[in-house]
Amino acid sequence: MDSDKICRKFTEFFERKGHVIVPSDSLLPTDRSVLLTTAGMQQFKPYFSDADKAQQVLCCTRAASIQKCFRTSDLDEVGDDTHLTFFEMLGNFSFGDYFKEGAIKFAWEFLTEEMKVSNEKMHFSVFEGDKEVPFDKESVEAWKKIGITEDKIKKFGRGDNFWGPTGEEGPCGPTAEIYVNDVEVWNLVFNEYYMDRKMKLTKLKQQGVDTGMGLERLAMVMQGKKSIFETDLFEPIMKKIKELEKEKKVEERAMRVIADHAKGSVFLINDGIRPSNVEQGYILRRIMRRVIRYAKLLELRSDYFDELVKVVVKIYKKRYPELEKNEKEIIAVVDEEKAKFEKSLSNGLRQFEKLSKDNEISGADAFLLYQSYGFPLEITKDLAQEKCVKIDEKAFEAEVKKHQKASRAGVEKKFGGAGGFGERVARQHTATHLLHSALRQVLGDHVQQAGSDLTPERLRFDFTHPKKLTDEEKQRVEAIVNDRIKEAIPVTVEKMKYKDAVKAGALAFFKEKYPEEVSVYSVGHFSKEICAGPHVKNTSEIGGFKIKKEEASAAGVRRIKAVVG
Ligand code: SER
Image (cartoon, rainbow, N blue to C red; front, top):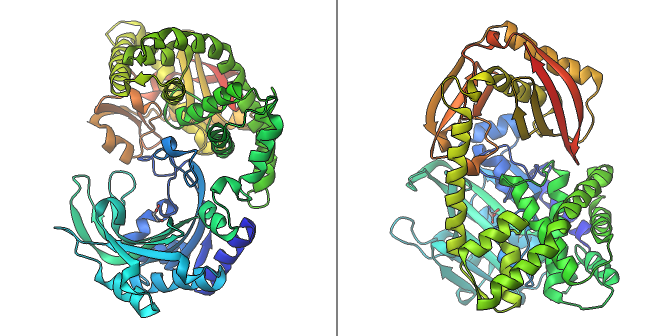
């Protein structure tokens, strides 16, 4: 059974069972306390505490989706038979509706009747119980009612059979899991608790279900394959890599990493993420650079990245038609990153050879490769593994922290101090906050700050957006900023914990550089950003705002130059 058919069967089945089918959310989640979408339940998080809300928004207390997910937690395992960074998750959800028995019955019926998976291939697991959460007897009873014998039901603890929350707090609960041929295929989470930020559990007032089944793993079962890389979701990519290999080195693990990371790159770029040194952008950069370095190792034909993008689009365009529309843009982004990294890659590799002479890469060495040659830690780790050299990862992390602290102090010095440079650019600085919010209002929430530079003469603001702005868009943005200036809104600042600031909806795109306590600057309800300041006290001080130029800065990144006064 091909994967498109599996998806169709899944949504049709749950639709028949009274679920509303909800499209996949973006990989860039609305909930800013997490960097990327890692599970199907994320877009439904509020409904697990509030079924009425689900009823209002979805007109239903049952939902099902096929969610695009990206997990960095499995990065090191990519290359084996069952782990990926990007994958799709088939899930059904109940918000105060059915619970354990209902969820177990649906899962069983779908697998045995729709997918025709034989009973013999399966085994199950449930939560064994601990001091806080009791043994999940109900799930065992539900399996037994279906006819499963107790010897097929294993019991595990928190590490295996308890899930959530995503982010810092949220719904969570014990899980029942289904294994096919010893591979975990479906995770049924029974959300009966809420975990707060101190990790304290309280009972939710309603019970909920959140299930997740990896499409690639199910496809592996349905297509009788030994690895996810042999399924129809990967086979064309693997074939393409072999075609692009001049010397036929056939390094299976390297090929798998390339296939997974190239696919992940396509989907991250498609959802508006661009390579950078922070947050989501750095996740993208890390996987792209790993593709580039493995491609060099395998001596792939030089246009390999474009070719890989094209195969990925071809596999998925039926279910994600926007991929085809964005193909050119995606190719432009990968080409640019490739050109950038290839410049330093050969020198970096030579440097690695030198550094690894005493069979150990110290934290400082790894940091040098990261800082001066743009090597993400994964690449240095891959190289170390290939050369059987030890690497001190902890010391590397410590080096990064030390450096961030130093650069933060530098930023504060640059912008701080009465009468200093900072004071002179305060008007430009507040104007960039207004511009940022105005751009998001006019163009959409995909707009993210990608950089800015202020001088007393002008401001420069880079942001992610795929297209040139139309004259009308520019005029609207300019008018919104000028309206806020005319309204003479006070600019307020408050100190708060970074986590609370993000929760309050403050824009924060440079998370890694922030201390635990941050300053949040607000312009009424119009703009709220974590920022070191300084800013004007009232928007009227800006005087006026004029866009001088709008141009491309990098692939998928636009640049606005503007003046104030
Ligand atoms: N949230 C659970 C998971 O991600 C089930 O969907 O595994």
